[in-house]
Length: 154
Length: 154
Length: 154
Image 1 (cartoon, rainbow over the protein chains, first blue to last red):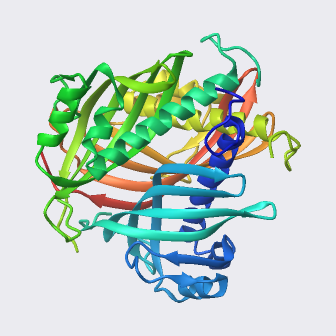
Image 2: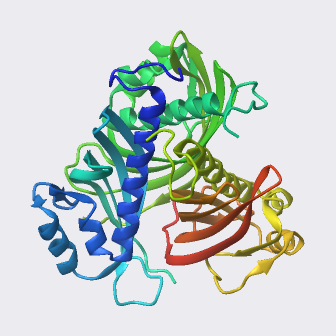
Image 3: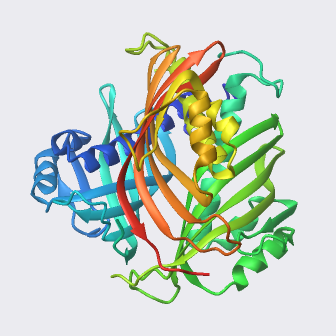
C-alpha cells in the first residue's frame, strides 16, 4: 500500500499529504468565517476563485475582492460552522476536489447571550488548486438541505 | 515514532494508511446512504457482512442482497448522516475495528422544502476486513442515544 | 512536500504523525467522558494539567486528582460530545496546540428513553505535551457559544 501508485499517478504518501492539506484548508475556512476574518477568508481563494454560499447556490461571487466585500457586507451574526464528512479526491499534485457537510449554528450578532436561532445543514463542493506553494480554493459551491429553528435556551 | 512498530506488529506509517482508508470508508457509506445509492452501499459489505441500524440494534441484516433489499424497501426520506469522532483500531494488515458517532438529520422524502423533522444521535461499531485489495465492512452495528424533534423552519 | 522541513523544524511526515496522535487524543477524551470513565479521563492530563469546561471557562481545575474529583462529583447525565474542526498546530516533537469545536447533546442520566434536553456548541483550546512516550493534555480550556433546548422526542 505504502509507496504504491494510485490512479492519480501519485504515491499513497503524497496523496495522503495533499488530502491532509485540503482537509485543514476547509477547517481553517470555517474558523476564519466564524471569527469574522473576512480578508483572510478572501485570501484563501485563487485570484479568479468563485464562492456560492449554501443558502444561495446559484449565485456565484467571483474574485478575491468581491468575496471579501460579500463577507464584509453581510449582516453580523454569531456562527459556528461544524465541518464534517470531508472527502478529498486528489487529481494531481496541483488539483483536488472535496465534498463536505456543514452544520451551521446561528445566533444574533449583537448578543452576549448563548441564544441560537437556527441550525442549517448543507454541503460544499470544492475545487482546490496549488498556486506556487499554496493550496487555494478555485471554487466553493454550497448547497442547503435542512433549515430548522431551535428553541431559545440560555 | 515514524518507522517504529506498534502492538499490531505494523509500522506507524502502515497503521496510519489503514486508519485513513477505514475513515474514508465510513464517510463514503454516509454519503452513499444520503444519496440513496443502495446497490453501492450493499457492495461496501463483505459477502456475509452484517448490518444493524442504530434505531434497531438487535436486528441484524446479513449478506449483500439482504442489505440492498433493506435499504431499497425503506420509506423514502431525506437524510444527512453527520459522521464524527471516528476512532479506528488497526488489528492487522487485514483487520480493523472502528467506533464513530452519527448525528442524523431527517426530513420527509417527497419534499422540496428544507423541513427537518428529527435529529438522532447514535453510534456505530464496525469490523472492517481487507478482502483482496479492498477494505469492506464485515459488521456495522448501530446504536441510538438521543432522538429529538426539531421545530419546522424554512 | 514529503520530507521537507516546516517552521517547527520537523518533517511533514513527523508533523502529520503528531497531528494524528493529538486528534485521536481529543476523540478519546470525548469517548471516555461520554462513557463516564473518570479515572481514565484524569489520566489523560499531565500531573499539573488544568481543565476548564466550556460552560465555566474561567474556573480552572488543576491536577489529576482534582480533575478526577470534578468529573466524579458532577451530576449524572447522558451525553454525546461531537468533536469536529480539530486543527492541531505542532510546535515541536514534544509540544502542540489544538483548537476544536464541540457540539454536546445532553439528556437526563437516569433515563432509558432517548430524550435529549439540550444541545450546546462550544470549543476547546488545548496545550498538549509529550511526557516520556505519551502525549497528554497540559491544558484544556473550554468556551461556550450556544445553548439551546430541544423538543422532547422519543
